[in-house]
Image (cartoon, rainbow, N blue to C red; front, top):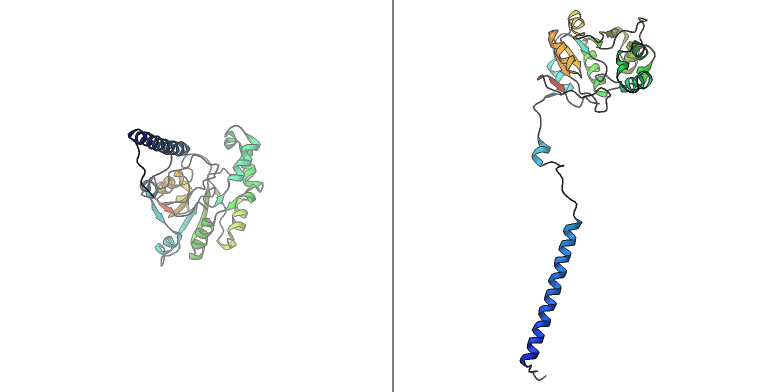
Length: 251
């Protein structure tokens, strides 16, 4: 095919067309990039870096197996347990009590009628035994330890309670090893005298008061994790006193 010769004018026209085509392509690419950028979700201050995700607090975690190993070969001891949120997830009792006696406040906690109903009317049949509580109790009972239940609930005014029987049923405690629940009441440091009276050397509880009361009584306070959905708020800071904390004990 013979070569086609173009005039200077034709060459200029061809160059202009090429430049226009290039400009249109570039504009299209810029438009696509802008559209893509606009389609991305806006950032926020939420989220966490890998460092934050892997950060651990200096808590002295301990397993039930490690507690058992630390007691291996030792004579039976006296052990104490708090009940609410330690052995039993008893929020159903407190939730129902609040709805019944003071829906808009926590005044029910100072109402004798609530405490009477909670501990003598079968309400704790709706409480859930914690798996960690089962394991801890089974370990101590198998060792032959003397187990005492000390609760911050006041004793029903009738003098009759059903919490002891419910604990026996829920945790399958042999009658020969069952001690009646001690109702220490709500006064400050109420559990100390009962810990001393029964020569308790280890006490399990979920609250700060459980740990401090144990120390005042000369016992070791071991923290059990309070379930996240407990009605007892705010949540305590586990390990704040340097106490040992039972791992996975929120369940």
